[in-house]
Length: 331
Image (cartoon, rainbow, N blue to C red; front, side, top):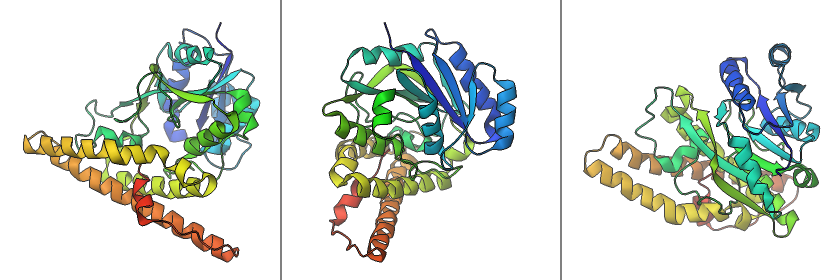
């Protein structure tokens, strides 16, 4: 018998109403019904009233945390009654067996959390030929280089993840100084949380499920170069904060594998496509350089800010090798 599950969906913008309705509709079609659906509204009184009137199948809550996704998720976590708390983005649609597949993994008592597959739902149905699959993390989707089905993950993708409720509460939930606030694409709250979970559990695992699937709607603006560069920069900035909180080795463990194995393979693939005249091949190869540069710059900026804050507080900045920044490239 699977554990009971609370599903938390967080929303902040009236402009995403259609997507929010689709996300909640997909939860009504689950083959394994959740114990409850908690819709947390992030500091938007108008949206709170509208959602409370429209969605009878969900418990609608005002975020009691600070502004941003992490505060809203913590509100849902603290209100949840299920053994497991699953999180679905407000612009994602879950497959009918999504929750059942997530819960199946918890039959293993060592599993603390599960991350599922997040597939892009393109605005024009075809996607962006210039965006390499290795950089799908910039649009909140599963990317080339993730481990196989049933393998251990450092951290899941936030649009499709579930954790044991008691384990999350034990470590204090999500760090509210990390994560997206409004439209600014910061991240890494799942990374930092997962590292704390691993440390506190003494051997617990977060696993990857290829069968727990959602589709994530990609806004047209996220397929433009300015967003791509901003997202990469914000990721580097967030990684610097995570590194300061949990240490460089833990913060950049997955990134080193990504830089050493995934990126070189992707660059070679893009150059091969360009040589063969495949549409988007040359642009894709260029995206690797631009994305990596943007992330390194963001990480350096974050490190500089933290060092300045440390000096202001009377703490000397620790020295570090320049190459450590080049590893901060991924969600």
